[in-house]
Length: 42
Image: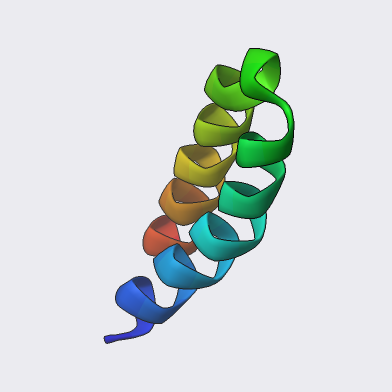
């Protein structure tokens, strides 16, 4: 449950930014995955 909440939080915030800037879509997704991995490790 914890990982799901954290994953949805960054994904939602970053998702809006990725839509605004298509060129930075890859960068945004990479950051989201990194954040989720960090939390999952904890």
